[in-house]
Amino acid sequence: MAKKPEINKTQAVANYLKAHPKAKASEIADALTKKGIAITPGHAANIKSKIKRRRRKSQPIAEAATPVAENPANPSNTITLGQIRKVAQTVKAIGGFVKLNELLEVIREVGGLKRFKDLLAAMSATETDAIPF
Image (cartoon, rainbow, N blue to C red; front, side, top):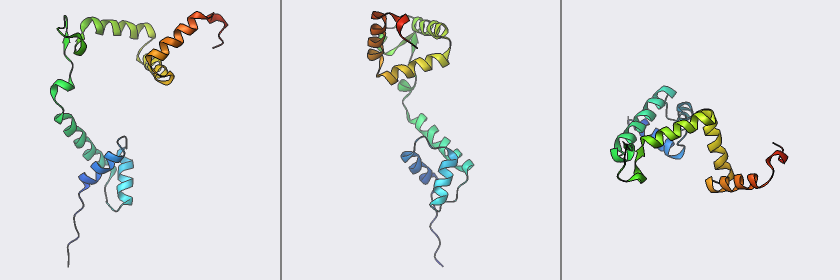
């Protein structure tokens, strides 16, 4: 009797994740089960986490972390302590990370920072009390 070819579940999960990068383990398990590959959501989650770990390990360390320096030699690729303090003060002034993320989403929705600045300038040119919010 001919032996049934073994199904490589890891490769099947990897292929599914390439097509659906945000898929959850239960979605992966359901989709692969429908294709005839018996896999549980837990097994799919384990495979998914191993794939992500391999991707992180393959990234060069220089790209993974940005150095923090008091006086940077090249400010374009270094985060300074002053910048961190300034961002922290801004986050506090805005009302926390949730409010900051809401603001960033509005900036994205209106078309970017330049467009947002233009809209702010237009608002300040008119009487802001007359604008119904």
